[in-house]
Image (cartoon, rainbow, N blue to C red; front, side, top):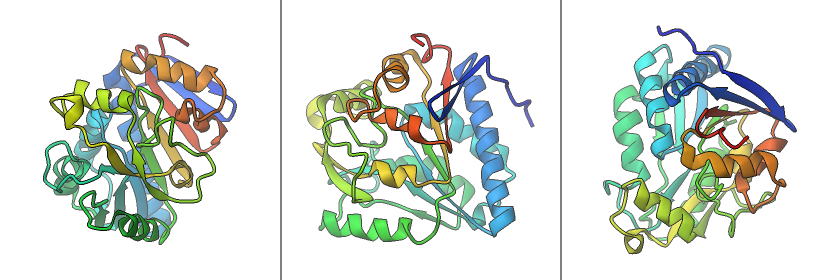
Length: 259
């Protein structure tokens, strides 16, 4: 197993522990090994584990290394993802179900991977179904990313609620979010990005016993700065992490450049 990289800088903002690594590769290696240990420990102590995973380009290296490392009895792990575009079929190349099936489920074969059906005929019924699955067991781990508008999952600033009563809801995507999806190569144009999505809400994400937020690359430097240096506000939804003593934010030197 590769040596676990050490952060080049560590500090705390309110209740949030922050680690900065020399590169995206070093950060991804550290996160993969840390998540592996968290899941293996949960399985050892409880006999099973449940985790929520994020999609997006920022998660690619971490997920690849997590799968490669081994050391987790995935047959005892139940997995969830945190959002899906409304109306997209399961095999759409930009869909998050396909992202997770190709990069995680087909490789590790977990006990279950529960997917949000963005193409469900009754979206609210689908939200209720997924809520029941999430609440059926404690969530041991939530792995997050931070969007260029500061979102967590698809909780964009206009629709994010820190006190949301729902755990899964239908939301309208803002243009900054949709532009990010185009720039990352998932859609050919802004018009091609679905206008709405299903998302886990911030209270659902924050309910996890451990929260690992991975936010590398220079394009994340402004939302990272806003999350850590601005007010705790839905203007930058990721700022809620500062109130989570069970959370850690992992950065590389590029995303931490404005701190």
